Length: 397
Image (cartoon, rainbow, N blue to C red; front, side):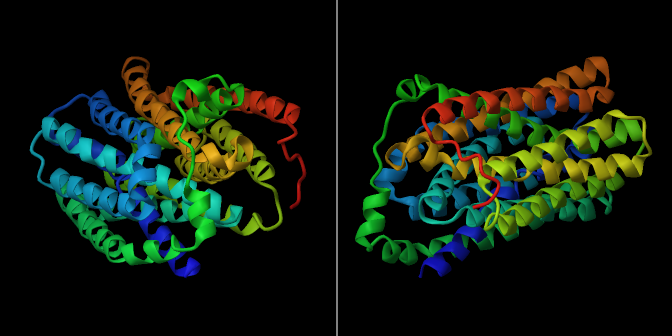
């Protein structure tokens, strides 16, 4: 039963990834059709992220009341409806409107499933969970690129992805009995009965502040690269919109590959070492983007950005019950999701403004600045955890 439920969770996480890469891939065609400035993408991404932050912050109370299964099903239905709305949108205002259910649904399912897997499954399962997220974000830009090759038909791309999301929504609805059976186990029910604590309580913990900042930086890198990577290649490397969309697919393939490899390696390596290996690959990839190298190298560098950043987010999340205790892990997970989306909400729009005023060639330097923030916050987190005897500095399990 636990294995079957894990499969459902994996499928649900594909649905979480599907919408995230669509907008950045389609934006060059959307803004040309609507006659919008490049930076206008920030309005939509800000609303999505803002709504996700709200749902993440209230997720602990909602999940404890209604259960992980129900929240997951409702959230996937909301995101499917939002994608259908995008496919019929005739202006930026409609995109902003449908961004609301997309953000609210994403935040709730993200917090619910991440904490459930962190409590009940191994580190390898957490990495594979986010690998399935990587599958979602890899499929959708490829499908969008096919739609864009047909007279810039980005609406058709959104509709195709809506159909996939709709099927996943039905799967989550039909799987609700599995959650009830799984929760009949008294020990699991005991584990899930977490204590809800306030943000103010968590803010007093220096380890929590460091973890939030680290997640802000990691997710800011992930989404800035995902939203602006295609535009960077179009405006600085001279690629067509269709070719840039296909190159951006490599970025998401790198993310999925990184999480798959991390999931396989998690049986041998500790979560902290997987994070550190990923950071080493990430900084090398950003340096490659900084150098005046051929377009094919820039495309490969985007792949490596996805590959290197991939294990950082899931492994830090999996450490949540260990770093902060199982009792408050759901509350901490919700704030971590909120912190992640603060980075997602603020950094891509900020880069849009910087790119419009300074030029899109500042893209890799912006990523490097975020990487430095990540390293500094991780160093602080490790210091605090060492004092509490909670840091595992081993290489191997």
